[in-house]
Image 1 (tube, helix red, strand yellow):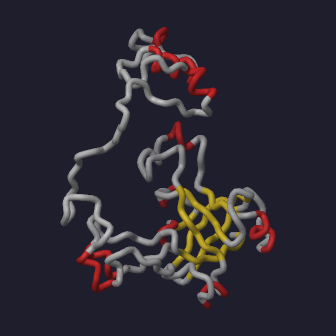
Image 2 (tube, helix red, strand yellow):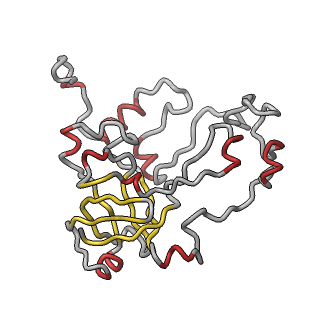
Length: 225
């Protein structure tokens, strides 16, 4: 875009060139004088310049809470036993759940460098680098006669979906991972939300941002399609 507008010659050609420009031309007094060599020598860390003896970030802020501060105690969660944060076991993917005998894999969703949640998923020039895949540990895939590139079906009592499989050591045994927000029309069949946990935690109704859907608290099994 810069080239088409006549500014192609001023666009940094490398990340290093960009970083040097940002440091050398910063108008922030706390950054002035810091060199890229200094940052590299500090493994990415360099002290800010011209700081007062005691520097506090994010001071004098007020929040939309009962106290106006960051609350640790919530009166409206007393009846749920969560006035102070207490550990809660997962709804479905917890050790000892008998359902795990039928559906032994915990399916989670992760973000991708290619998309922002589900935005831009239909961009042709992005999709050439990514297709919907379920990632599994090679140990779990071998047990099921699955190899990288096979089309698989992930399923539980709620439903199923089909897509390609990728085996990788980056996924620990007993789990499988899929990128969040995949549009159903790009799946081989179905939607990943056909299997996700739709349980509702009652205390979610009083949370500041509303209920949280436990997508990552999902048990499935996988077979070669």
